[in-house]
Length: 262
Image: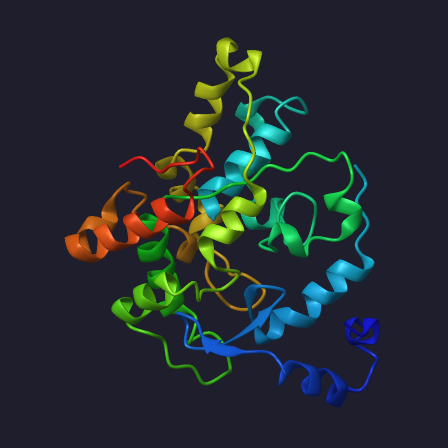
């Protein structure tokens, strides 16, 4: 991999030549995906990932971002005065920082993978994720200036089972980060309940900061909050399709001790 491709000052033609050598597919939004280092990236994400790998040095989904921010900063100020009450979780936990990235573990810079820094991995039940992300993708074509042809939910499910999804395959992404977590003493001190109340879907959705305003690329903050119901996928995915996906996930995670409960 030519390191010059990470430099935005290099001729665009060189990068376009490289991108054309990568296998290509479509994601649920209908935009292009490219297979790079075993994972699928959107066209516009490939160069930033390369840049991330070459230049970022380690120094040490909305509800999940709120949880991670609250947990990491719990000792800085009382939860009743949390910045989540006045600031969008997407402004508090930004992309390509040590607190938040979609980049697969194997694509992280060596300075992170081989350091002693702590990594907290957040994920959802794959069936809930599939429905939630499909609805989210429906909002993007009207906000981006690019022509897109979003996939139907059924097409998206089929692609998912083939391992074709943004930053996927889902199971490889998950297994790359998988580790056994230990229970801390703070769980016995009530901190878990406090964070759960602060980061509850109802509380976050009803905050003014999350009901107004837009992201820099035009997506309203409210787009990150839909129903907040577990197993809502049951209203959209057929029992047979759900069974196939669950069997696939079970097969891919076999031997890892990682399971998803229904």
